[in-house]
Length: 423
Image 1 (cartoon, rainbow, N blue to C red):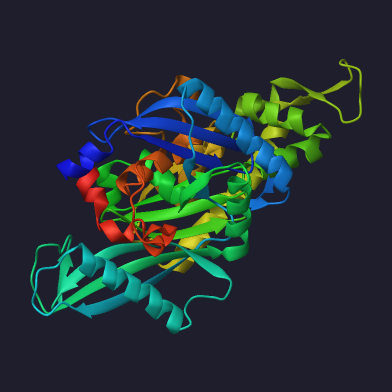
Image 2: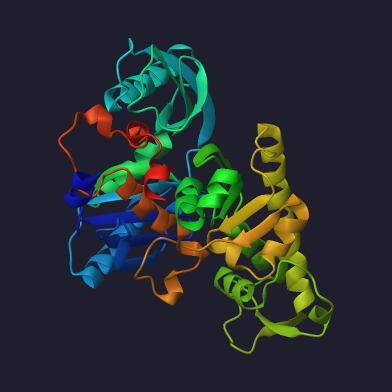
């Protein structure tokens, strides 16, 4: 462990959060205590991506280049490798259990890697993996030796059969390749992909939440992604094709106002729950196609809230139905953490609590230092989590390992329960 700490001491890690509403780049230096210190931040409006899927490579390439350039200028460093979030491609979860023979010898990293690779091959050979999908994560969630279950880390133990229960996350290969191609056109190598709610959970959750059970709901611009954590591991992920931009579009249509003004009103005056005073507060609404600044319509705030609330209710009802259908709703317990830019809307935690019947809090980036107040909120939890993933997966300093070991699907699998090693 100390050798590994020395190797990445003062090393640079870079994270790239490519969302439907913003592109964000964090550059951090890794301190001796494995805690990243942010030294560069770049932030740009996202163009060329919709609902997590690339729709215009040139526009998205420009957004990424501008965000990375701003972060590099602030840090005074140049980067060539990034770990990237993935919210598109309809990430899907599945579980697989395997056993491999260890012939009585001591369990080591090679045995764990062999079991995980066998599990991936087994899933493919059984036809469980849909055609056209790419492996993103293979995460061990439980170990057993000779039938004895509940083992947290089997390394150093002896037995005849090593069992591993794995959480497999896949995504549409075309969507992943399109995003990867766009990033590589920016002269950046990809250290790994991480599904957005998984990254958000790494930075926004405390250890007790991870162990006792919690649901992370990342409210992005084009998608709402879900992750369930239990016993220190992510055990389920899902995505709903609805996000904060849908709320903005509803406002623009309902009040006949340009999108830029709809977003501004949502931020300044929006609320997730109606209040009695809303009828008495009047707001000015610029009208579509009107050039004159005084060509505005005055409407009560209650009209704005009446547009926002139904869409948010629909979002949380969809999340609730996905969790119930998955069977992980009870395992996740009664704790929910909201992240993403959409979670910053006033009153959204109260509305989520009512619909999901759970205790809700707004998550913010933890375990990182150097963030300014403007970038320390829930909207940046995913980008901060990507840094933590990179450090825990030992991406900070690339190693000379076979290419198949550096694939995103194996990054967590080959180091076992690194949650408990670092957090």
